[in-house]
Amino acid sequence: MKEQSHMRIRQMVDRYDSMRTIMLVEGILVGIAAGLVSVLYRFALGKADEWRNAVLHFCQGNGLRMAGWFVLLVLMAYLVARLNRWEPMISGSGIPQVEAEIVGYIRPNWWKVISAKVVGGFLCIVGGLSLGREGPSIQLGGMAGKGVSKLLKRFRLEEHFLITCGASAGLAAAFNAPMAGVMFALEEVHKNFSAMIMLSCMSAALIADYIANGIFGMEPVFSFPVEGMIPLHYYPVILVLGLLCGLLGVLYNKVLLASQTAYKKLNFLPDWGKLTIPFLCAGVLGFTMPVVLGGGHEMIVELYDGQLVLGGILALLIVKFLYSMVSFGSGAPGGIFFPLLVLGAYIGSAYGVILVSHGMLQDEFLFNVIIISMAALFSSIVRAPVTGVVLISEMTGSFSHLLSLATASLVAYIVADLLGSKPVYESLTERLLLNKNVKVEKGRSGKNTILTCVVEAGSEADGCRIRNLCLPSRWCLVISVTRGEEDLIPRGDLRLRAGDTLVTLVKEQDMLAMESVMRHKVELDEEHLEGQRS
Image (cartoon, rainbow, N blue to C red; front, side):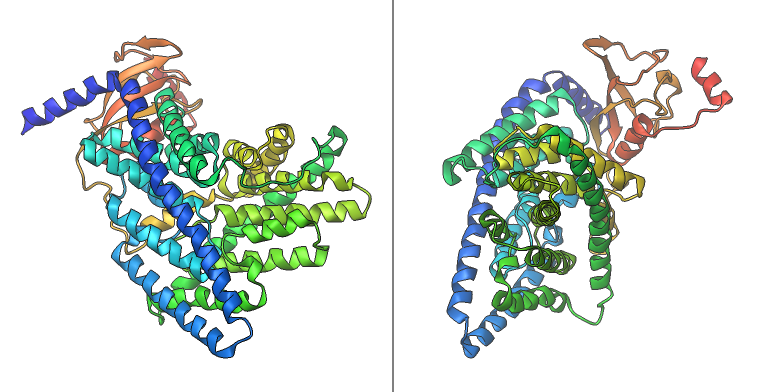
């Protein structure tokens, strides 16, 4: 048994040397698989929107038909609850599940997640819940990557890489945004900017984008009639908008988590009873304010027309916000990306209309403010400003707004950080692992994996010799150290520096502890400093 273990470790280390080329090729395979699955999901949700609108039009004004639609909504809630019970990992966005798997906490069944997520998401959008397609597309892409890994019988390290590639491809196919898919996978999912994972994610995202463009066309998701770049003398207005989006992003995160807590307190209701709440709300809104149903594309169309007054904009903003909280808090399978971008657009629209009415902004720059607000709110909530800037640029089909987008996004990010608001997906991942229905596998598996970490400035590893590193256990092994373009021999007396890339062999349960050594900043006392110098 020990010889087999040593042989497997040797195979992992040897394979790592040639993994950059391997991962580039495997990224293409994952891009095909994830692209097809995500495109299927996107197509299904498009049909769901069409069918729902047709049913609402058919039932409008007929009491018996309207009552029948409410009965169908309750049935859909029951079916979604059964799917959630059959595969608990489909609940919610799907991004926290991917992040939890990357760090080794959970091991969901990939084909069950794909099948249940597609059906569950379709039912939720037919019903009219305020949920997006991007989070589920990221999870579906990640599970497609895992499926490729299982079919190729890859090591756990490669499986994690392929899941990240699939997540990148999923977002690319969902929004026709390949670069945003790469950035989100690196910035939010994998949290590592190694060249190997970046190249493989890029190959996967591009292939998935080719597939999506071949089916849905190359038109950007948002087609705002923007006249030109916003002038520099309006940048104080952008700074205030970034501040506003930062504050509202903090509020969004607090209310989102509070909505989940509120549903948990409804212990007297069965799971299907809790899901009935957003479905019945969808029925009421479908006959009174149907524009807020689904992800919110119809609300964006309303902004294109430019016919909304300030009161109508604020009314739709408030209703969409509250309805999104009711929908997502229930645990229904669906994401928050698209609805939060719609909220950002309406915040920017309200803000812009006020400025225009007071002569503080020219009317031709109103859509610029809307686009900037979307990126800023995303950065405040998700805390991934680079992804936010690239995503909005790709979704609007224009990279001419980078300076204004980056300015507002950075301000919003700083405001949220100063107020102590956690990134939304980090909070959701923590809640996922605390859920009694999720079996946490940390510490159970003793399997080895290869982990790539970058030494951050001020961390425990910065300035420390390898032999003095506080490694999680005696089973951790430093395989290689790269400094710039130079490969260093990982001897015990080698002093690490910020920016060094370490490849380590660790037990799965030690992955987070190892990353903590490389990333967490510490206050070094004299005794610690003396130990590093020795």
